[in-house]
Amino acid sequence: MENKDIQVLINGQEFKAKEGELVIDIARRNGIFIPALCYEESLKPYGACRMCIVEIKNEGVKKKITTSCTLQAFDGLSIETDSEEVLKHRRMLLELYLAQAPNSEKIKELAQRYGVKKTRFKEKFRENDPLNNSCILCGLCVRVCNEIMGAGVIGFIGRGEKTRINTPFFEKSDLCLGCRACAEVCPTGAIKFSDEGNIRIANSWSNTSVELKKCKMCGKYFAPSKLDEKIDSIYYYRDKNNELRDLCPDCRRKVITKRINLITENEVERYAK
Image 1 (tube, rainbow, N blue to C red):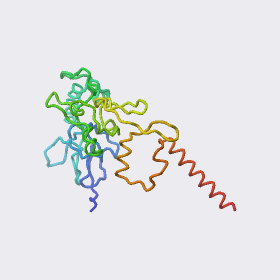
Image 2 (tube, one colour):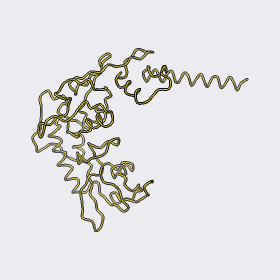
Image 3 (cartoon, rainbow, N blue to C red):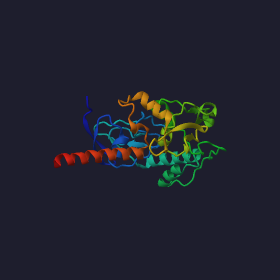
Image 4 (cartoon, rainbow, N blue to C red):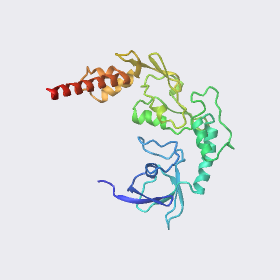
């Protein structure tokens, strides 16, 4: 059953939405900026970073600060995304994140947006940190590796101030698919990969390495072999000899374009007769 249409107020402006829709999605769809460090549409939200907080302003309801990534819309909901109370909390959070991830340029940029130039808290620098002192422990990388990719390569290690994210015992893992999904969802740019010849190296994950496939047309290495095998096991290819599967994206485009041009030429010739 489809959720019914409702109206919500964001910063005094009325917007259409669906009942139960997440407020952060409504705001973003309408061009309203709400910062978030742990929100990823493909994962169930859990409000870990607290940066997406908003203030509920409904009459007769006690003012409340809550995360917009977990707040479900209801008809008549009224919120403010940048009230003084919200801004005060965000600035404090950004000071904490500047101390937690002192090398993250993305955290610095976000802090600057809110007028936070330095932190009052002690910065946590670790020598030879594989995440370059840029991790805020949001857990997105762990979740996407486990819940989306089903690989389980990384996890939380230690407790309290000693908590880190990496492979078990900081050893190379043979479970990594080399997909780089963890790097894609990382909000602080902490996770690094590098391609060297036919090998993809997960620099942040104990230099775990994965072999890359070679394009049969141009000879360029382009995709992790393990990832290709996993995809093949999930989605059965009707034509196992499909030449496109062994071509890099650039060569695939060339082959597809050639086929389209050939079809077009044949159609022109057919109608010309």
